[in-house]
Length: 375
Image 1: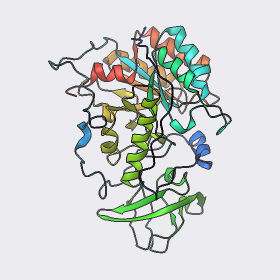
Image 2: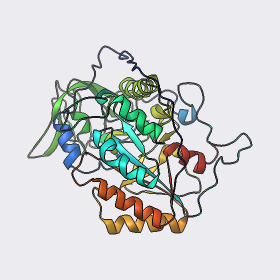
Image 3: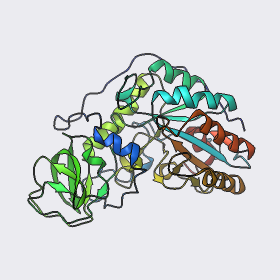
Image 4: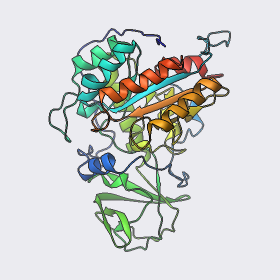
């Protein structure tokens, strides 16, 4: 099924905003964290409490993009701008912005004349031989946009914006924390905070590793206080706000119209949602683990997404597409094109299944215009 393809006029140049605080140096390349992301599978949804130093405007989920008002997904009379496809719709999201989005995914999508979404890490644009691959240049991103693709923000340096929960108690002298995932240990030098209600301690990250007690995040110092299992490990509000805002600003300085956000490592929760809602109208992977979004009451800030090549089987994907078509639902599916199993042929095969079921292929922006109620 041919999607609605909209071109984009793209300007040249790239802007960089200054870090918000001197104590929060820019993140590194990811180091071993990249290997964990390649081999470890999607992160489970964080369940750590979000109390503490979240944004004061915790009710700002409808506060809009950069203070100018949230994207109005409906017409002035409240009606939807686009009719819902009878057989449902699918949004296809590719993570990180590697060259393979251009060399492997784009040719397949052109064959079917359908768009996709590329979630771009702004510090990786145009880099060569970085983390095992090359990364799309500005001209290649422009070509994607001209082909109807949507360019989404994936942060400045691929840092997690959500929380992790400590799975073991932490003593005052501990330098090792044992959370349910270690994404916050991938960027040495950044500041993290541990929060238990209103009680918060901050410390710099040294790295991450594993010992007899499991995977851990190593701190440069010690906590100085005891924290029970279940306490939240996260980046401070100013760090989350900075990386979320900077990535959007840098992409817009390049000329792209950016309204949607892709959370690194699929780590997104109630802590990160208000920060993202300040700048974006939708999050493509707010609730990972399932690709099916109910067409009634769809909330773009709570979108479900799952993978369609990695971590699954062709039989499971075809079953999910059947469900989309049968229910007239919105499916959001994704892939990392730098992974060896994500080939042009596998993408083409999936697009063929979508076409056979007469499912519409949309960008995330188009999906929000079609399915979002009252936003």
